[in-house]
Length: 208
Image (cartoon, rainbow, N blue to C red; front, side, top):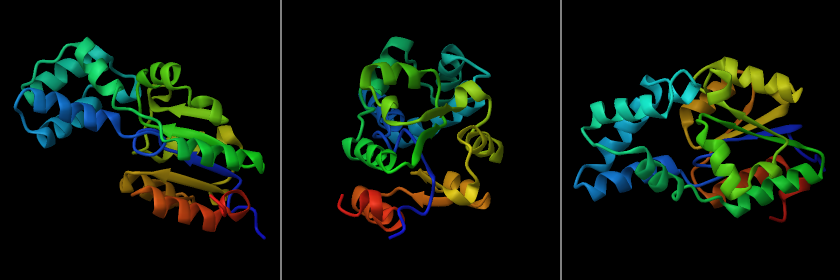
């Protein structure tokens, strides 16, 4: 039996390792104000990129100013953090998956377009111990929109693209990874994901 089609597996955080708290939190903020959740989510993601917050070129205050300008919603930092953070809930089966992979010698990492919030979330949720490394766009100045972020992570993990699996709920990010030769998994739900991982890494996950 082939243990695994890869020697390293990279997991997105929000939307894969955990529920997508940023989207859900923005929707909650909008609904509390009688505004469109869809419009608030779009404004939030635009502000995250346009402010440079996601790559460390801007900070939380820059994001809030941009978000207010784009959405017309006034939100202070305390309410934003409280609402978004509580919506990031870790998926235990994802941590179990990472643990099983590591138990058979496969390295694991988080590869996330995030901010310094990721560290604060880890302090509350204790997920990083299940992974060998954590790559956060905020600290590297590049994002998953760019091949360079994947190349950096592959280099730091000491693996080739063809020996790696990347899991993300954003198909655009999966496409970038696949363009480099990584095996991409577009996460759309638990059952489909577990079936795909069991096929790719039967020694670790066939009985999950």
